[in-house]
Amino acid sequence: MRCRDADTANTDDGFADPAEEPGFPRLPAEVVRSPLLRVVPGWKEPPTPGEPTPTYYSRRQSTMGRTTMTSMSAADWDSRYRGSELVWGAGPNVWVEREMAPLSPARAVDLACGEGRNSVWLAARGWQVTGVDFAASALDKARTLAAGQLPPVVIDWQCADVTTYRAAGAFDVAMLVYAQLPAEPRRAALRSAWDALAPKGILLVIAHHSDNLALGVGGPQDPTVLFSETDVVADLRAIDGSTTVELAERVTRPVAGSERPALDVLVRARKH
Image 1 (cartoon, rainbow, N blue to C red):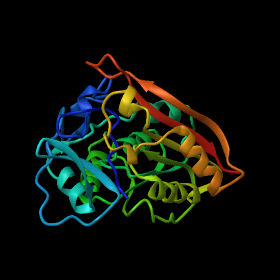
Image 2: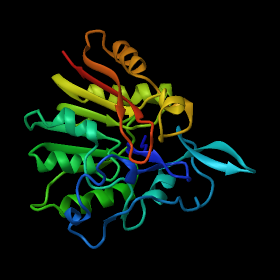
Image 3: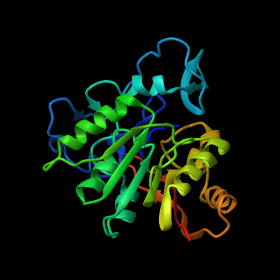
Image 4: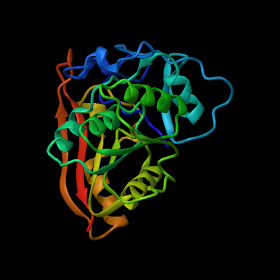
């Protein structure tokens, strides 16, 4: 299942505002090379037509002055991504850049890739990348972003649910970045990522930390889709007892205009 890949602070619509990521946009809008796409500092959610298909994704919705949670379907995410703007920007996530930059190019799968900013960044560095998301409009924008690079980059875009995705081949790196999922679908997504790895392959998990709700800034306000590095490690141990956890931390990410940093989960694990 697809959840947003933003790593930034909230606007008043209940979603993150990519303009508040430190250094945003990491790449200028000109790098998009297409009149069809531009980076904007925020986004307002359009009305969702019809009754949404139940999913595990959540969003905030104001009802009589109260904040409630509603589900988001693939159609909801398609509505959100539809339009000319890049919701999350063109540049890579700060933790993706830190963890992936030292590695030699190989094969990577980016699960819940959204508009493809991390996939495109990897491909531009020589990686063979598969980007997976269940929002078709997000993948359309990802294709445009990839085609707008100089030179253009080629990525295998697949429209699929990350909780049920099955890789066609073995990858050297699997990434699950800011997927907001409750416990059971989170474990399913982690299993999809783990099963996609070749022996010695690396899994990189980045997420909004459960502590961020009370101690940080931005991110989703639904505690059921937040988790900790301990949760991820426990999930991975249950999937594969031979997992080597190389890094499991709560990391702080400065947010422009906020005295508080955002708190993120950062886990790097290796398959035997």
